[in-house]
Length: 167
Image 1 (cartoon, rainbow, N blue to C red):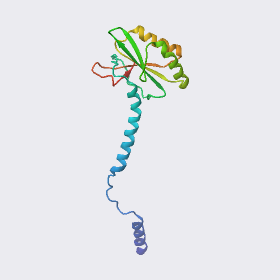
Image 2 (cartoon, rainbow, N blue to C red):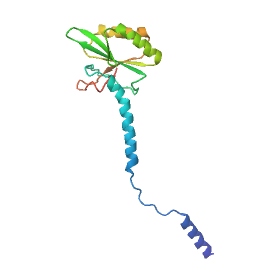
Image 3 (tube, rainbow, N blue to C red):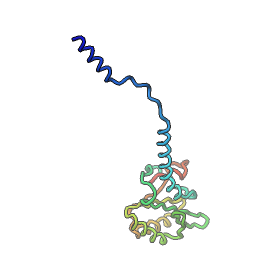
Image 4 (cartoon, rainbow, N blue to C red):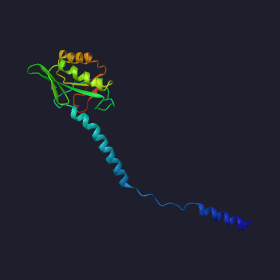
């Protein structure tokens, strides 16, 4: 019987895996993943960076919320509203194209709404823009049938216009 016990122990010992060595840290797969993530985030952020205008100084709103996770592109139209204090006039900039009046926006908004029914209109208005001018833009959006309008603001005076929040 002792022979039988010894053979079963020997069989169990043979079937067990030998103790493994300490695993080595593989850096190549980690670098691959980091590069893929870097390219992904750069491609997402480049669209929004191209649409912003550095001449727009966003207003401060203490009760602002963090920027929503919706990505710029097909689902969003960024409208930069500039104001010249010298002659008290405003201009509207969309994708590098300037529109002198809000009435010129209506065909653009109608076309965008036809292509993407649930798109968001993000207004980046300069802090000096007069309400009367901004009201004409909102009226053009209403005429076109836009229902989702968001304003871009900053939550602190020292924050640059590159870190907007929404109101």
